[in-house]
Length: 402
Image 1 (cartoon, rainbow, N blue to C red):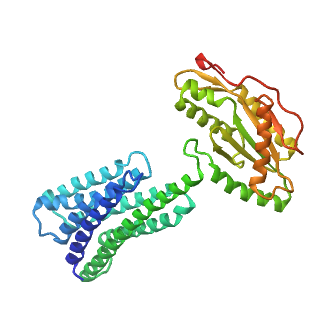
Image 2 (cartoon, rainbow, N blue to C red; image 1 turned 120 degrees about the vertical axis):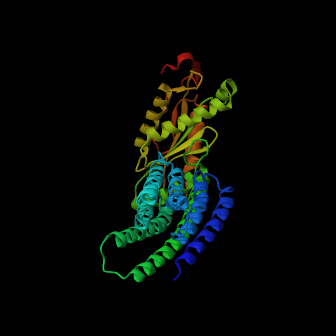
Image 3 (spheres, rainbow, N blue to C red; image 1 turned 135 degrees about the vertical axis):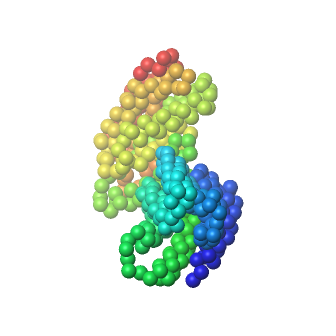
């Protein structure tokens, strides 16, 4: 096997992949860092071509050959760390390239040693690819697991081959020189194939993360980040089915901010959006994470309470209502708003075979709470009796006092 042919082929493929990846990422949202993956194949291609020329290069190119090649590997690492939003993405890669330049200069101009320069190359590749392998630990999520394992296999193989080539060069192994050259050529070819695999894996990572983001958008409210109507319906369907099977109650709170239109009219829709985000965050913090919280639209929110009976649900709604009544919604301009909430409570009945049935009963109780003067809790029939007392809707006050 001719090592020069492998290296030249690697260079050509590298340039083609750089062009294709560069064109692709222009149309992919949230691809910060991916541009370095495309750019990486320029130094990888040039470096591979220089490696294919062996020692028949001017002294300057012998000095620059390993740093150029390692720059390509470094850009793969930098792009990955930046794409995963890790801190200091340039630190390790820059250090490895700079160290290789210094060592190469010394072992070219002062103490010429092709073996040392090759070891600089393989050790640098090992360090950078191991760092990329470790960075992939931060790729989480069940939908990304297979892509992460694929990339870990690619980066791990390149790192292992680089380490093996270093060990063959450093350790006094009883190997024939021709055999070593043959194994080196094979390792170079496999490394080239693995780099191609890594690029496809990085493209798959972008695609998988984009699909994951799109899936979140279908079930998450873009303003507040909690479940939207579709998301809460899907969560409720599973929860209701499980509750019926095990014979446990399940309650639904339908919450509506009182006089919210006046907030938009007096402070603007942007401030109204701030209030909705704050209210959604308050709901998620007030209830356990196992209790799904969703926004049905406008200022109407729902909370699903698995394992909660009539009395418990009514008590939970009253605690929430009083908490909102005492809470100050702070605005960016330094003001704070006092708001109240009306809550309708419904507990799953035998007739509630679907989510719509439970929501309809909770909504009816919510309308009754509005009609009763707002800032109160009303339970659907078979729930806890009584309602909260009426209170003023909202008022603006300076200084944001609680």
